[in-house]
Image: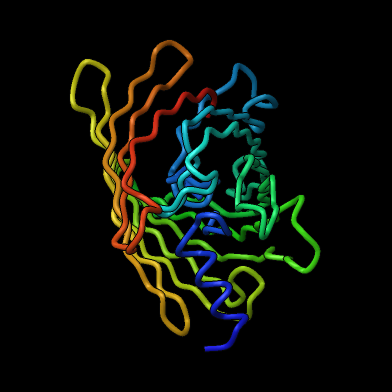
Length: 246
C-alpha cells in the first residue's frame, strides 16, 4: 500500500486527530443521504428556495465523528427548479481534523435530479463536491461523489455513493446504505440505518445508527446513537441535535 493510500485510509478510519470522512446529517451528512422533509411556502416563487440549520453535539457522518466529538453548527440552502425535478444547493459545517490536516470548515455544493417513479417510489441522483477549508499546505482533500437514493413510501431509503478519487488520494470508495423512519406515536419518530464503506485497497468498515426525534413547533429535536466496527475509540456515541427548516 502506498504512503498516499495509507494516509487517506488512516485519516478516514481513525478520525482522531486526523481526517475522517465528512455526511448525512444524514447521517447526514449533507444533502447526500437523508431524504429531507420539504415545507411548502405560501407562494410558488417562495417554494423553490428552502433553508435549514442545525446545532448538534457532534457532527457524525457514516459513523465517524468529524468534529473530534465536539459540537457543530450547520446550515444549508436548496433551490428547486420548479417541476423539472432539478435542484442545486449548498451545505456547511465546522469540522476538526486535528493539527495534522488543520481543516476548520466543510462546504458541500451539489446539483441533482429528483423524481417520483410511481406512487410509492422516489429517485434522487446528485453530484456532490466536498470542499474543506483552512487546511495546512499540502493537504488538499477535496473530492466529488456521485450519490443515488431510492426512497420507498417516504419511509425506507436505499443509498449508493461512489467516488473515484476519495480524499483526493487517487483511490475509489463505494458506500452502500439503508435507513428508515417510522412514526411511533405522540409525534415521535424512530430512525435506524446500516451502512457499509468499501475502500479500494482495503480498510472497509460497517456503521449503524438508531435514534428518535420529535418536532416541537418549528424545531426538531433528535437523539441518535452511532457506532462502527472500526477498532479504536472513533465511534460509539450519543448525539443530540436541534434543527429547523426543510
